[in-house]
Image 1 (cartoon, rainbow, N blue to C red):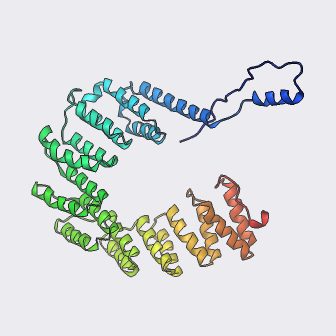
Image 2: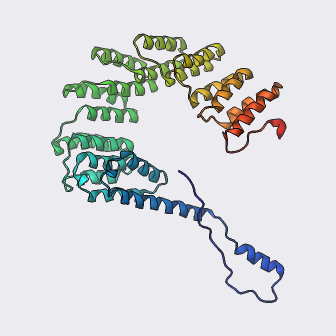
Image 3: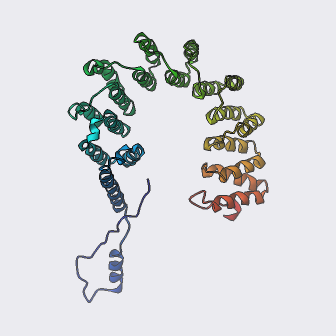
Length: 393
């Protein structure tokens, strides 16, 4: 969120100066009456701007076409939530009740969900409960929405209770989305046995697990080193004829790397390609990290260069994995090339990483290369302050 200079506070002397006052006293008074910036005033200014944002949002929401612009609603709520201006969030969202759209379940669910994304569980549940009074029908759509709110607000005990009690109260039947939300909740809680058990529950109620079901489980199982259980899920997935995608494979890939089974991770990449699943940047980053951990420069470099062959662009994480490792290997020529790439890109690695390369080049008497990086960083305003060579002070 942008910060702005606030109005300056003025201090005035309460007593009029006498003729006997010295020049020093007059000087002190002049200093005292000079406007000074202060943090509380700046904070007030920021709050004033957010209040104006909320006021303009309410004004704009009178336009029916504006109320269909979901990104505007989300960005405004996220900005207010980041500033912890929850009363303003309540103000703009409660304002939406006056419009006829609130009788449309999809619109009402969006408002419920926005409360959830802002971490305002009680407000979300209150609006959910008020939907019948607002002449808005509650179906499995709104049921699923309030379950998701529980996850966003980390109200896992509430989710279990709502999942158990609401279907009968609302006269709705949980669908596949409902069960997947319950699985995600258990995964976030770390209750993996319960999460896996929901698969049997959903099948007994006539719903087959889908790709979202398996990917949610893979992520949690591999992250918690439940490799054997995860492999059983792969068998079940294949028996259900659910085609895996790159998000299915990446948790397994990361788990193999963490477990030091780098050769198996390479084999998995080849298996993915054989099955028509192309590795993404997360796949490559995991593999590159593995070879860096093993201090295998040639393989790390090979897989980094594989990115270009596969038309996958490196990201900030890629460079923050590679650059410290290459510096550890004292290969500052290659680090120089990597730094030029990152300084010419939109990625922002930490200043300490770039500074380490600059210092290494200078130490190796490659001052010209070091100056190239310094000039490139400063010319592009890469950092908030000027990068310098050690020799420059």
